[in-house]
Every structure is written in structure tokens, then in C-alpha cells.
Length: 555
Ligand code: COA
Image (tube, rainbow, N blue to C red):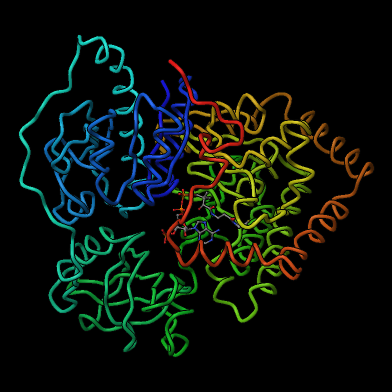
């Protein structure tokens, strides 16, 4: 089938569907939902059999759904209608939720159902549920729907009309408001989780109006509503029966940042603990497991330094394999662009951040007394994808999407020793293609290319358990010593051919041009990325129907 993905943004769900549908042999193009006449032009150019809308913020124009089959991915159970579907489900404490694939019709979310899937709800941030359970259910439902298309076309199958519930409205800030004196921790967490990612909960901290993000329960008690102190970069606030830790905040007109950077007076709060739980190390027999669960997978300068310290501490332990486990939602997305944007000199901070990231990568590449494994429970992008390649072995959860390229961020050249790590894994041709195409890579394709060594596990928890078991097999294998010897030999040969320092110097020279040179593209792109400036056009590498030489398809 020729499928046009019509989406508000090329977000994680849209990327995952892109990867899955391409792997199923469909011909794909993408148009971002910006303007009705542009969408209609895209439809005329691409002549899709199906228009698929994984993530829309408004209705599809009537002229389009009347003349083309349009399927909408609704992040709600069958019958649920309206915006903020997942937010409502979390607020209402649903134990099961779902994804429904509906055909677009005049009434919003009321068209006939092509497919639906359900999943048990987990106590988690909305963004985490979206990236995991919702995405997996949406993939299953969309693949089921596309399988039904030939029968639909032949007239032997039709989607079913189902009784619809009354449409709920957008969850307002008034409905999200926390009553700090009355709400218990469970209720406060529900409100914060239901708003995580976007839009956050409007509140006040230290007298400053701000939206709150990235919260978890914290073991403390105090006067309900009082700020009890700070832990890491976040603040601890008492609820009616306990406390919560709040990691990030956004002031009106500002960007989302660690609470420590947003709140004047943060440093005067008493420190309740140093460790905010972002970095965690555990051991299972001969395997050391290093978790780094940075918010949104972004590793700022300080996080890179702390992770390097944690890595060195892990090296001091008598293990045989170290598993770099990243976080549950993301392995890593590279430099922390928000912190960079907020810095006095974004160029200087970019350089500090990349140097710290490179130090971390080098320590992993140069580890010669044990084996290292990157275990990607969640997606990885830009420098985060190359951080993974610094390890000897790379495994990913089934369904992980990789974006191992930098150019989408204002033609950034990239560092993390990618000029060494990528060609040695996939060869120079494929390395060039990955970097130029700037498209998401699914695990099946990544496996075929040699970018990763394997993929398995339906959920993050299953994947990690299996990854640790496999790491243990590596540690206990009869050929462990010879594998280690080969690793040392290959590294020494590579170093003799071209030292790591030379790769780093070349990459950083190009990065310095990105940061300090005449062309401001990186700074402009980063600003739009962190400010979430709405798209005003669809990037050409996604909109195939706008490629030069595009021929009108004939069926
Ligand atoms: N720094 C700061 N925040 C980042 C980030 C980074 N490097 N990468 C992602 N985020 C944030 C996004 O702003 C978004 O924030 P939100 O919670 O306020 O919505 C959240 O993480 C999820 O990112 P999003 O872009 O919605 O995820 P996605 O799955 O749709 O796309 C990427 C994934 C990796 C393609 C995309 O996030 C990206 O391009 N990130 C930047 C990578 C980069 O250029 N890093 C710097 C060079 S090393």
C-alpha cells in the first residue's frame, strides 16, 4: 500500500509506525499537519491508498476524509472520544486502557472501528505510557488494520460502528490543580503523571508561577504543601500524607529545565540527600549493571561527569561484564539541549557538554579488562545512539527506534567518536547512508546493518532481565578470556592505525564550526527544538512526494 502519514509531528509513535510499515513493504511518505491546502497538495502528489494519522491535534479536512480512506490512531479504548484521552485515563485511575484505530468521519472520534488493542495500565508518567504501552498497542492495531485493507477494498470486510460515549473535553489546568493541603501523594502523583511531557501542572514554587514535570513519590513528611528541601536538581514538597520529588519546572515564557535552574532560592533549601536516583548501580554475579535514567534521555555536562564517575566506580568492582542500561524510556538522546539553551553562552556549554560526553565514550571504548554491553530498553537518538556503540556488544528491546544521525539538529557534525564507531560496525557506505538519510532505524534493520548485535524482549523489564542473563552467559563463557584478548588486540591495532584522539580532534574541529562558526543553523535548530516552535513545513527527507523528480503514481 501507499500510505501517507499525516501527523502533527514526526514523534516517537509516528517514527515507530514508519519503521514497522516500511518493514512490512508499504510505500511511505510523511506530511506534517500544518495547513489544509498543503495537506491536500500532498494527497494529490502521493495518491495514497491510505492516510494514517498517528498523532493529530485537529480534525482532518472534510475534503480529504470524504475522498480518501483516513485512519486515526486514538489513544483510548473503544468508545472513548475526545482530546486528552490518556490524561483522563490516568486521572481516573483506569486499570486497563487501549488504542483504537478509527476511520475519520464528520464527528470526532466517532467513525467505525478498524482495530483496537488494550493493555493493563501501569503507574507511570503519561509520556512513559505513551512511549511504551500505547506505542506497542498502536503498532499491533495498525498492522491489523492494514491487513484488513485488501478485504475492505474487495468489499468482503467492513469496519464496525460502535456505540460512542459522550465526548470528553480537553483536561484543563483547573482540573489538574493540586490541592497541596488535601491531596495525598497518590492523588498528587496522578495529577503530575497525567500532565508529564505536556502540559505539566500549573503551580507555584518558591513564589514563582511554573508548570511542574518529572515527579516521583519521596519518603518524607512535613506540613502539607511546604517545600521540605532539595535532592539533586529537584525539590521535595510535602503532600497531605507524604511527599513528592519534582525534578523539572517551566516558568511562563521559559523552557522546561531542572528545578535547580528555574527556581531562585533553590540553593538555600536544605539538602535532604545528594542522590536523586538518576544513576544507579547493581550487581548480579559477575555482571555490573549501570542505570542512567536522565529525564528525556538528555545528558548535560554534569550528568556526563557523574556518569563517568559511576562508570569508573563500576570498573573498580570485580565484575567481568558491565551492562550500560540507560533508562526505562530512553537509552540516551545525547547532549542536554535545554540546559545548553539556558546557558549564558550556548556555544561554550555545547562544547563543555560534548567534551564531557566524549570523555565518557572514551572511557567505555578504552575499557580493556572486561566486556561492555549497551542494553537499550528505550529509544536512542543522536549522540545517545553512538554512546551505545562505544560498548563491545549492543542489544535493543524489540520496538526500540534509533536515530543515529545529527543533521536534523541544524547540520550538526556530531562527535562521540562516531567517525570511528559507526564505520567499524556497518562499513563506510552504510555509515554514510545512515547519516545522510536522517531517518529512524528500527531494530530489525539495525540488526541487519550490524548497528546492533541483537534485539529481543517485548517490554523493558523482560528485555533487561534477558539482557542481564545473556551478559552473564558472556561472563561465564569458555571463550571469555580469548574474547577479551581479541578486544585488546583489535583496539591496539585500531589505535595504531589512527588514535582515538585524532578522531576526537577532527570531530570537535567540525563541531567548533557548528558552535562558533558563521553558520548559525545549529543554534537556530536547537532554539526551535527546545522552544517547541510549531513546524511550518515538512522536512524534505520525510515528504518523499515533494522530492525532485517525484512521479505521480499510477495504479
Ligand atoms: N536535550 C533535551 N531534551 C531532549 C533531547 C535533548 N537532547 N532529546 C529529546 N528531548 C526532549 C524533547 O524536547 C521532548 O521534551 P518534552 O518532554 O518536553 O516533550 C522529549 O525529550 C521527547 O522528545 P521528542 O522529540 O518528543 O521524542 P521523539 O521520540 O519524538 O524524538 C529524537 C526523538 C531523538 C529524534 C528527538 O528527541 C531529537 O531529535 N532529540 C535531539 C537529539 C540531539 O540532537 N541531541 C544533541 C546532539 S548529541
